[in-house]
Image (cartoon, rainbow, N blue to C red; front, side, top):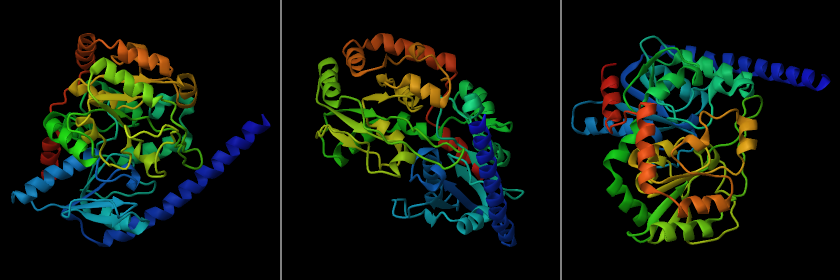
Length: 406
């Protein structure tokens, strides 16, 4: 009992400090209200400023820039970043994400577009519009209150606070429309635009196929499996953290199995979650190979998916986006029990998903060698129907029209 009391006291003190800090930060937003709202100004960010030019905000920005170039609009996009060295189109104004820059730009923009929460203490003015695109579609791992007792109280407070600011949440499926209520702790308007970052999967597969191979110096006829392990850590009880461990996938066996089952020359592209990639050079692996390429610093996951031929993950929601273009998808969950104990019960029974599930390398190799493409496609079609997925590649256009009406 003594340990729990100390833990509760520690959490209470931490939450008190966070609330005080949020209040102090909010004063900067109130002070910036002396500046008028610019009806043509849009502020965007990804992964709390830690991401680059990627995810759904990128594709909304691309559509707006296209309209600007055509002379249809004169919108100005400001992007909040922790690292200003990241590459962006010249038409987008990069701004270092600090308290005062956030307070000024968010207080004077007509529209905010993000894929993650705002900073605790952010204040929004009347007549401003906050569009939340979120950074995951259909999920394997639970989010928000679906985590039950494993959802930290501080995380709940931050999520609920941010959700009260949101005007619209975007969705591309019936499943997400239902899940977002508890997952995002949100009771506002959800609009069925589709998911902007999924547009590239419908329109640019051939282009990205060529681009990925040219950029990373591999043959155009080579085939790529994208390996994207999910984010671990990030508890908001106290200090935010990310976990880095050595990859346990046997990449040499994996590549050999891919070539035996699907023919051709295969490469594996390793892509870490942006919150982990921002803090390290790459996932530790003892398997040096010119067939294993780290693409973690590339900011846009979906263009990599569009240029790949197969997808491997543990619990990443991105596997449901590769599913949209019928890529063979595989799950390697060698720490399933530990992950559930840390994260909470998963949204799905893994074995009832279209993706073959392996708990070790032997199982993964067997799943690849025995992969039944027709069975997989039938299961994918059934899943899309049951989840009510309605992605069609035109989400960015719909969101741009929404913004133009503001």
